Every structure is written in C-alpha cells, then in structure tokens.
View (tube, one colour):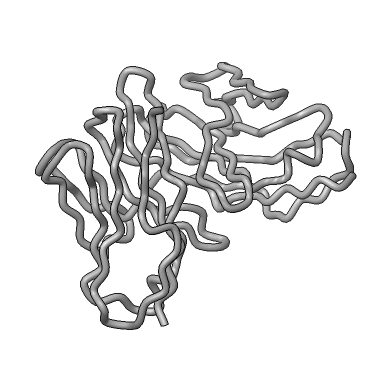
Length: 112
Length: 112
C-alpha cells in the first residue's frame, strides 16, 4: 500500500530535549515536506526537499532541522524544543505525474 | 504573497442540509486549487482538485469550481451526512511539489 509513515503518533517531551520525528514514504517520490498545523492558522510549511541532499526552508523553519540522506526518509529534528513548538505535524510526499500529495497520519507533539 | 482565506467555523448543519464553505485565494500566477478533508484523529485526504480556471472538481457528492474572475473555489454539497463531519481545508499550489498553501480550515459538524 502506498503510504507516508510518521513516527511517533504522539510525543510529550520537555523543553530542550532533542527529538526526531521520522517520516518514510514507499512511493519513490522525489518531493517531501513537513507542515505544522495550529488552530486558526491551518497548515504551514516548515521545510521541503526536492531530492536527496536538496532541502529548503518553508514559511516557519526556525527551531527545526531536516535531512534527506535517502529518497524514502525525511526526518524532522528539533534540537532544543520549546513550548511554542507544541503542534500537530504532518509529513507529505508529492508525485509529479499525478500532481498529488500524500500525507502521513500526523504526529501530535507536546513540549512542556 | 499567495494566500488562501476560508470562512470561519465551526459550521453546524442538520443531516441532508445544503453545504457551502467559502474559499478565496490570492495568487501571483495560475495555481491548482484543492480541497482536503481531515477526519477526527486522521491525516489529510485529498477531496477534490481543479487545475485551471472554470474546471470543476468533484468527489463523494462534493464539488467546487475554479473561478478566476472572483478568485474563489467554494466547496458545496447538496445533502450532507453525519459522516461528513470533519475539518475542511482549501489550498493552492503550482504543481511543482514544493509547497501547498493552506487556508485556516473550516470545521463542519453535521447533526442527525
């Protein structure tokens, strides 16, 4: 089954403790991206990647890092999480032929 | 810059009522327009899309028409069901895989 898999689904952590949210897709898509969803703001892009080793900032990149060492994986790294990064995070991949996005199920992160 | 504005929610309807969720956009070019749906506790699913002016996207009884003259892409359904209760997001992109720009989302609650 074609899918984007994020882990974990839920995470509660403390301020300053480094964490990684993983994202993996099995569709051989070149484009992948991370979004955060906050009430009243919709989804905003954090980072995106056009291919292996090619990444670029989205609208809200501060406090986040990404890497793209393999085509299938696009982890989101929070080196020193803060409470304002409490949010619902989605990973997505994009298929150029059909011009469509596939989203993961989301990771709900709480930073206390 | 480009942006998407949706009507504020929550929208509460009785089963079999007519639904309209307004969406307007600001774009510098000629984007594709999308409606995504998010059921409780789940990720985003593509509901419908339109790639050029006057195109009508439709799926599961929902439809929306790409109106360039009014820069709108309003979502409609003739008879809603309880199972349609979800958050609906309007979005645009330029088919380059880089970024979806989302509206703030509209929560729909359908009562039996």
